[in-house]
Every structure is written in C-alpha cells, then in structure tokens.
Length: 137
Image (tube, rainbow, N blue to C red; front, side, top):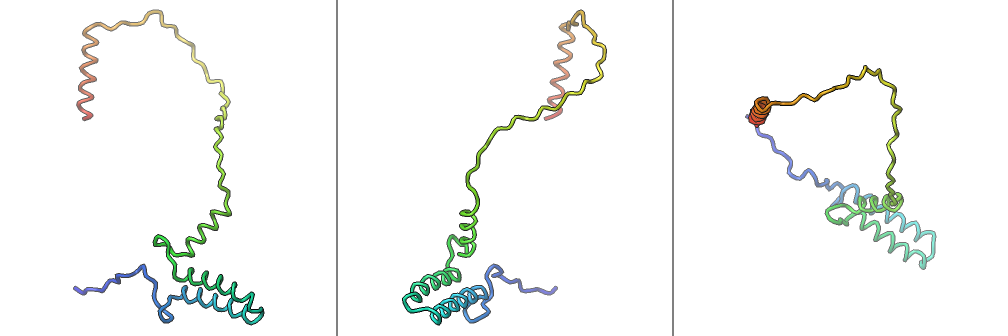
C-alpha cells in the first residue's frame, strides 16, 4: 500500500515573493506607491506625516495580528461595527387575533349525573397506570 505525505501547515500562506506572502507584498507595495506619489507631487512638510500614517497602516495590514486574527479582518469588523446601527429596541407585539369561524355546532348533551367510580374500579385504574409507567422505563 502506498503512503502519501500529508501537508502539515495548511493554514499558513505560501511565501511567494521573498519572505512575504502575496497579500503582504501588495499591502507594502501599495503603501510605498502612495508614499512615492506624495513625495513626487507635494512638499516635504506634507510628505512626512503622510509617509508615517501610510507606512504604519501598510505595515500593520501586512504583519499585525491581534488575538490570532489578521489586522485586515479586525479593521473590517470595526468599520462594520461603526457603520451599522447599534440601538435595538424590543417591543412586545400583541398576537394578531384570528377570526373565529363559527364551527358546526353539535347538539349539546347535558349530563344529568356524573358517574361514580367504585373502589375496585379505582384499584384497576391505578394498577394499569403503574404497569404503563414501568413499561416506559
């Protein structure tokens, strides 16, 4: 029988471009492109704060993990939390009453006397109920 090697690290992304995965490389390349564009078009007083902000955002997107969750996932969840409404009001609704259709009424029979059980009949009923409970167990 042939044996096959099973990959052990299937949750880890492959390092494709040097020591970086494709996602990490794209985050860093995008950050460097934004910094290079601001350097080319704006003065140094604007470039330095933009470079710090964009560089830290690109670095954290590429490498930062919080509680074993990648930073892009944390950022997405936090933005969705901020955009969605958070006020939930519970109002008890009265159930809609269904219209009762008049059912075909049978002539009512009036019981003039309630039948009484004798002691032996009560013993028979109790015995049959005990047997049914034992059979269920």
